[in-house]
Amino acid sequence: MYLRLREEWLAALAFAQVAAAGSLAGTILGLPPQAGALACACTAAAFKGWIAKTGNNGYALLMITGWAAAILMLANVPIAEHLGHALFDGQLYFTGVAHLVFGALFLVVMAVILPWLSGKLLLERMFPDFFRASGLSAWRFHLIFDLLVAAGLALATASIGVMGAFGLVFVPSMIAYRIGQSWKGALLVAIMISLFAYVTSFLLAFMIDQPFGPVLVIVLSSLAVFGYLIQMAFRQGAQSPPGLI
Image (cartoon, rainbow, N blue to C red; front, side, top):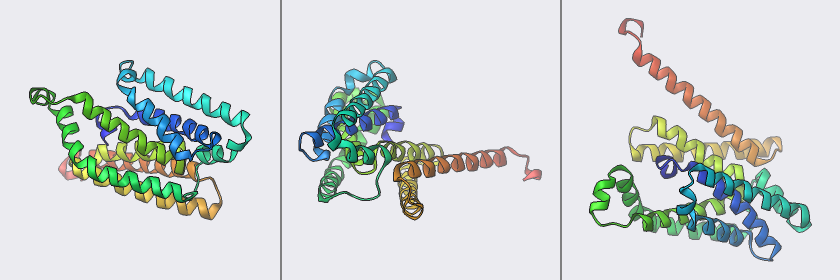
C-alpha cells in the first residue's frame, strides 16, 4: 500500500527479480538462499534513492539485469536448477526451517518499526511542507522503508517465487486503493484479499498439481477483474436516475 501510495510499485518487481538472483548466488556459494536474497535486494534498496532519479527506467534496468544474472547462473551451474524452478514457478511449502526463521524475524522487525515509520511516511507524502518544516529527514525514513520492502520481497521471493511475491504486492493494493474508504480500511482490504488469494491458490495448485506461482497470479488477476467490474457497477448505479435504480 505504501508503494502504491508513492507510485513506486515497479520497484517491487525489480527487488523481487534481484532477490531471485541473490538466492541463486547464495546457493552457489553455499549460503542459505535467504541470505543471498537479502544481501542483493537490500544492496539495491540502498541505492534506490539514486535509481529513483531516473524514474521507472532505473527500476526496469534493475529488473532485467537481475533476470539476466539469474538465467546465466541457471544455465551454467546445475546445482541451482532446483531452486531456479522454485523461484520462477513458485512453490507450495516452506522448504526448510530457515524460511520460517527468517520470516519470523522479519515479522518481529516489522511489528516494531512499522507503527513508528508509518506516520512519518504518510506525513511526508500527504503534507510535505509540514514535514520539512518539522525538521525531519526524509531520506532516512525512505531508506528504512526501502530496506524493509527489499527484505520482505527477498524473503517472499525465496518462498513463493518472483511473480507470486510481486503479485501479492501489486494486485491486492491496487484493488484496495480503489475501494478502500480510509487508509486503515484499505490496509485491511488488502490483507484480506492477499490471504484469500493465497489460500485459494494453495488449494487449487495442490488439487490440480500445478506450479503455485502461475496459479496464484491467475487468481489475483481474476480478483482484480472482478473488483473492477463491481466498482463499475456501483458507479453506474450511483449515476442512474432514482427512478431507474
